[in-house]
Length: 462
Image (cartoon, rainbow, N blue to C red):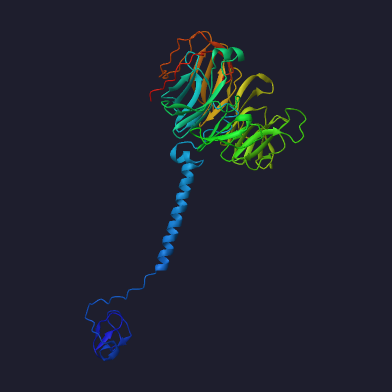
């Protein structure tokens, strides 16, 4: 009997050499093949021999998957702990940048859709730390006290800031100022938790701190740069050059030090070093005014030609961007924001300007009523202070000048004006007004009456 060697079908005996079903022409007389005797029934499926498992390939694939997962995990870890984490989590990792802080006192900050800012309290006699949503709603006073606030860093679930607090009466009279004690505070975003984490153990003139991930950088004893953890512990000295700093990022520290052969006591040169204090070096042999660090590029004002320049961290590529007598410069994204007179012929009208980082598309955002001492750029908004003959006020204005939001106004000739929807959610005892002392408010560049009472801080309702 003949059978098809491909499908196993029985082939009638005769001269036919092809299988009618599969047209296979290779026929074998299986019945007479003593070495291969078996019977294949009609429609019976022939099972294929199981192939050996390719264990080596499977192991290789498994290892590859694990490597990919580890890379993805590493990337996610960097995203969740690095500079771009705010894109994923909506929370800052770096508390404040150089443009908003050293150049502009750090009196406002942003995280997510909340803006945190300093203002006078409604009575003009105390300072309030507030927050408002970026749409202008839900204004709240988080804390209100007789202090001055600078360098507002917002990181994760906390706000960190420097507060200058009044001394006692004897000290105030001896020093002719009510503000001597400076402390670093840590406060929850809703204001319910507030505590001191550095009680004056840093430079009395230090108004700037930088919170970088889980470390706080500050100017400590003898103007050296220190860091500590976010609870105030594990304090470490970063350098020993007694110069302080002019700006810190997550990679670099800028500071001024004497030139190699100084000609006078003000002959400083701007240096850069790594965040751990290593590799200190002069940037380009000059003093850089109003520096902003973006990546590995420094934007600064060149005092020799009154122009905005940029230079690489390694000192290369120094070039003029835009001719301007800029001050309080603040670089955010592709734009440089700064204060300057309206034009060459108007030396009494100050404006907020902006220009692209390539020197194009210069615009005037707003004309000021008077001189203002700082501008904080917060997303699509610019926080600024100004004053007229009758009032001192704080506004938010869109970076394109299209809209303005009032945050605070104090009338010199009458009661202050509280912007719509903002009400003090605090219960401060202001009955002790006997020791009021006139001081200079550095932030607003205004003289105002500061209440030197020591009322306890209370917090806002969320």
